[in-house]
Length: 449
Image (cartoon, rainbow, N blue to C red; front, side, top):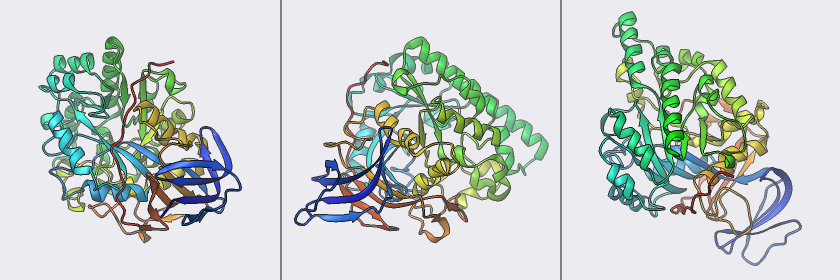
């Protein structure tokens, strides 16, 4: 095959919607124009007026490899990702063993080579005792450093304020922070045990992993970043109170950025009644008022990005008593159709959505030649049809865990096709079997304007 010619597309890119034809050759976007004619052996796709946009760059996933592959693997979860319109992802360090060394990072890159349908990079996890590894980190070895602000267990948990401060002071790259305060969560859990004994209901999770726990840790992260001049990215902001701490404006003018996760933008605490422990995730799903505040914050640019925090668990791990149930949701396969609900609800325009899922992630993480539809850039593209619905129950589950919290729902758009590095990986409900994902390259960081 000598390339692709996409005709009659509505291109959403860099603040514009325009009618275009687009040629892909040798993995890259060769030409964007109108009236393009086909060449020998070129495959033609008639978009028929459907939207064409840069693929989603998911800045927070948990693909579980190594060590937890019964839940998911780089191969299985990346296939689910491209079905959901994700063409690149940044994977978290919560594996077994955790990714807290440069050697572990190298191992993950080695595992992904030739086995990922989407492009990839990996976070180095921060811990109490790996400051030397953090300081030795070389450009391009990791997409960033992930810090769990008080809510993690095991090797990624910080119980030393001094160690945490050193990470912010000496991090040679961006710090991405999960912000929940463990002392507040523990006190809330003790109170819930007192009220309910061993039968804590699922809806208590929003009160145990509370807004106050998020606020305290987020305030601490902001203080540390401002005192040390750290490039900080706040992961999965979930409360109206946290938003009040964030400045609106163009992300390129900020040293601190923030994202919301799709599930916090879609579900509310009332959904625990139907979904029960299947909705358990950290940070927890909050109130309708919090969801409304998150959506507004995306519009006014207090929040800069949308991610999934895809975290698969087996269905049996979501059953049982509250304290034994795993926290995390598999979301990648329906990422863009679910995110399109913001467009359908008129919370965001298509242009704003593309900025949050593609442009800003590429800028913030300095991803070279990604995140935009430009001539010469890699052809990471998604075609989406807003006239069709994604009927979730009619889709085969591609994630290893084989379930989704979107079961029974109809999402307000459909991913018609996904290209990664110019190769078609998903079309009309089917994977092509190609695994063209490549290691993401980064450019040197630019200071805020």
